[in-house]
Length: 127
Image (cartoon, rainbow, N blue to C red; front, side, top):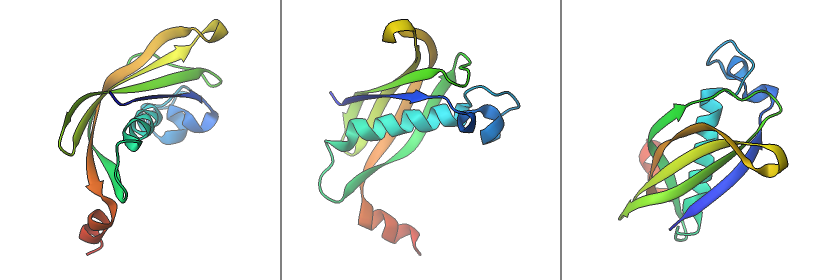
């Protein structure tokens, strides 16, 4: 099963205020989504052939708890379904608590990616 995880520290640039998704200086949902997608990219990377990449096609994400600037969030992705080029990943994000232990659940959901030939994909959209 393809899996990956990464830790991210919330900066001022990651806040809802900075990314335009609210007025508070806490982790913005668009940034959490970007982190989830980045981790799914890492999870599928080893399964890609030369010239292939993956593109995100669907996201279902619940942002469950606020995280302050300076907080660390560990985002994990685990492939739960694969059929041909289609990949579904379960994603979760947890604050990293004292001594690196998992803290509160910040977000969870699913990200769908499709494996594509990068050159063919770009040729289709360059019109």
